[in-house]
Length: 299
Image (tube, rainbow, N blue to C red; front, side):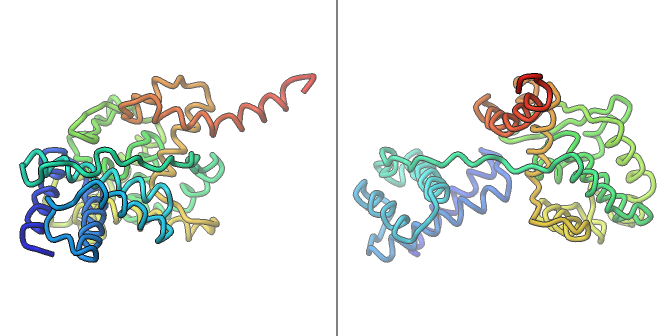
């Protein structure tokens, strides 16, 4: 990789972190996508970013399908590179955005996976609340399920963001957007128990404002949360893998199944567009059909 290309890549990553306020998890994907394209440039003997043309962009997309990348992965890479060259155009590193007119492959509509209420209860019951880590794990899961927040948002919660009297949480979401989300009695009880009996023991002499901490007392990262949830899944003897977004998906699905309107769920999830929330209607149709078949006298 030429020095100029490496500098351009690093400036783009700084822009995503500082100006766009993207999470480290999102930035990691952008970095991999840009580096993958730079490897393609080296293979094609393209020496500078300004030499990349529309034909090269099309050739790159073709190579993605030859390498059997899934449509979603190819679409993400194209989107990442379109943003990368848009930034380079702004910074006058290039004179054109070769990915501006590249058509992204249509994504197959993947329905969000979620846990049933019985499965959620099974996960909660698997926590050993006689230990500080068990109290933390229960509070973590209860809050994720009660609010539908993203794992990155959960990792960034600070003590002052919690209002236990009003049972509300100030969530700092994508692009510095803030929203208040309520939570119920189960989450409130588990959080109070964790803060009162476990966090102090875990944090020890460390000093930081983050609510959730790891076994060494430091702030719990998004990656740490994923590890904890997979570990809980294994201990609960449940089949399949769990991922943090399943709590978010379960929150949205259960809210809609129990009569919440779409706009409310959109606001609670922090979705900018209603179309992002509407995917859950496909999941809840199955519930509606079962309710109809069980309830209608002529079904």
